Length: 199
Image 1: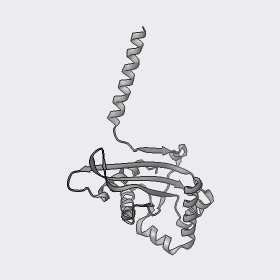
Image 2 (image 1 turned 45 degrees about the vertical axis):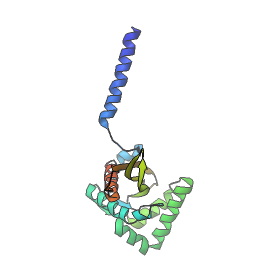
Image 3 (image 1 turned 90 degrees about the vertical axis):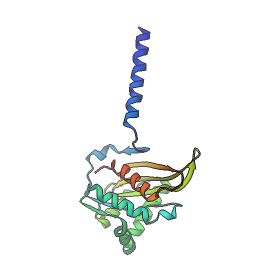
Image 4 (image 1 turned 120 degrees about the vertical axis):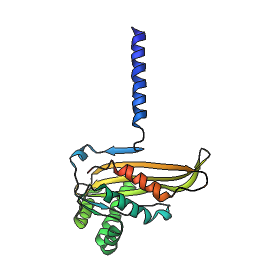
């Protein structure tokens, strides 16, 4: 009896491992708020990408992200890329509110509902997307030369400040002589991530 139970457990474990292997891929990290099932934003604001130390990704990452969000065709209206940069440049109140919101989020990990409501009021958006670049470089890993791009994203409901979805993902491409274009890798990362964006 014990031997049969052991075989059954072993079979179940092997089946589970094979099922996981068959699923493959997926994002490195993804967390969905339970309320996101009922969350269907119509207007999305995509703020400029926080490139951190990867200056070469500035503006390029915004253009890629705007393109991928548009091709998704999940929102009635999207403010992203150049349009969002222009809005931030022209509207001092939005710029200050956005800076205050992101500072609070980074320093004390608090998504301030008052500030997010203000962002929603100014942009007329139901949700906004914040994106950070984690990697944008050529490096060596396990003796191989690779081009690597990684991003972290947060989708925030403007009316509540609730983070409905957050995720992190990266892709790398190995090469011998010809470097892969980091923009192409970034586009693939954005597509994989945004395929899981609630809408």
